Length: 431
Ligand code: CMC
Image 1 (tube, rainbow, N blue to C red):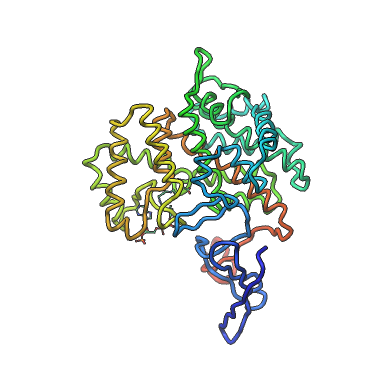
Image 2: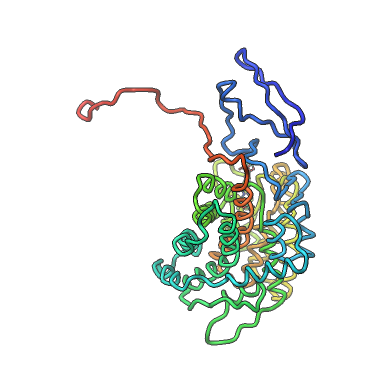
């Protein structure tokens, strides 16, 4: 916990409450209101948590105004350029970049946990043939608690470690199986001689009838997508994981809750929604109509893949993702694809339109990731599962940090009650 550096006095209703102020290592000061109810008899009101820090954390730092994203201090553009996903996983989990030996050991631990319990295959088959892969993932990841009893005791550091490795290692296997199941193809077992991203691509795209060779440029792009989505501070799904596990729930159940939250179109579901929107717009001449709709207060339509709760300048992940998109599209020779033309024109118009400029609505990471994944051959239904594969390490790191926090309390917000006050029950014949 940061040291108290100052205090503020809150005066209301003839009362005075002194609130400690903490200075973080970076970012704005934080007012500690924990004693406010006990000493002042009032709650604070902040429904979307726009001014509320829910925890202290040493993992990820975002400066939304400056477009900065740091993992354990290292900027995301340097990690995307010089590092790779499993090294970033190590950094997020353990706090430092690994030595060569430690990295080799970590990679081998992850690699040796990629297979899932064979009986889980039966569990997949219980889903409807055309189930959305996210629906399958929520169920299967939650069900891991029924298959891995030896890593559900959150009080045991060793079990927590095994659960973390299992989740990171098995998530690509589970996501690719959810995909294969949804398209009626046989499951493909992991191959431990391949790197994390190549193994995932192979499990998604190979079929028993022919060989599949992973293109290194696509594998690098996949690894970057994983790296850029690895963690993002206290976003909705991470906060969901923290809240779920604050009750003492096991890690598999808690991460399943995070996957469920991620699915929504305002969060991880935006990559699917963004590409579907580009397809719905269809041709460049339709763009003005959709821009008009996005600005209309009476129309719920929003430009998916634009805007961010925290980034109000630019999304640093989007910068790297845009570069990656150019590389992949170049390799695959899809520059003349109609969806891509719509994407490029929409990006240009939105960046110049006063409505989007004034409200600081820039293309976010999901605008570009959808374009890359589409070009790679993934259906839109796989976009959010891929986000879930990548974000698992963020959820796990934040969960581990929370569990070992001596100040851990069950998460339990209060409310501003607006319902009826006390009234006596009325018998049905008198209503
Ligand atoms: N299109 C049109 N108008 C928008 C958009 C958009 N995409 N995003 C925000 N606005 C407007 C909104 O109508 C509001 O206008 P006004 O002040 O006149 O009422 C203003 O901008 C502020 O919007 P908000 O909803 O209060 O902002 P927020 O910080 O609560 O929402 C957001 C952030 C990401 C949910 C929102 O920008 C959005 O819905 N974007 C589209 C979905 C999307 O791309 N989400 C992915 C986020 S990045 C991946 C991730 O981290 O999960």
